[in-house]
Image (tube, rainbow, N blue to C red):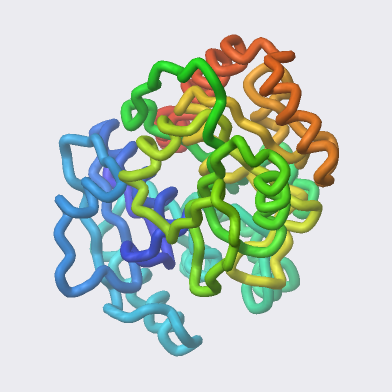
Length: 358
């Protein structure tokens, strides 16, 4: 099958969006489909082999990448230019299946009566919200299926069951080699953005009180944190290829989300429906996960089964759960085994296979 995948991200971006798109294309390739990824810009010195190493791609067959306008979508004019190129290339490539993470592309495809699958990972904003909700393009008959990142996300849209499918993110199990545990718990780790609501302040507070434990945080952006604690190490974003080793060398993996969770867009609160991509990497590593109790997350993580869920985003509650883990009040080996079992239920291959059957 020839599949076109439309996305608005950049391959130089280390975001979960980019990782998701690249990993999905790799999974389709593993299933022996012919993939063409449409992007606004690829870059002058792009080499697929570097992309393969950076994201730990495992398909033997390379997928094709088209740079449609050779510019980032920094303004509305560039977005219109990109959409025009999407339409032109779809007509010339004649794919059997079109998948898009670009809501504006979905609107365009619907206008020109081209069937496609739309991936929705958050609520719509500004122009996209006006087109999709007010002008009702979200109800287009040319959207074969809407794929939501969590069941909780549908509380915003209220789609009929027949119109949507929930597919959480995934993981490539082959990227992870479960490391033999240390006899004692020493290192706690967080990976991901340092945006508002990600619990960075809570982690620092925990580090101040658990001085015998090491805390490593990966994902610092431009605003540098000045933390004067000997047991805290803070690192910038790392490439995905480094993540498995970082997780394997940790003992506890942290997901301390607040009641309001933000992404790069400081106005978009994703707490009610987020399903973090890193959660599946955490599961595949076979380590103890401690997470906040958010509805989208709890569709995958279950307390005392494959993780530890903290009832409230308060220091006392987190301190209590970490102390219980240190005292081995939980069956930690059972939780770790169940984490790996859960990861096997959410592979990129299974996700891609499900989409091709729509």
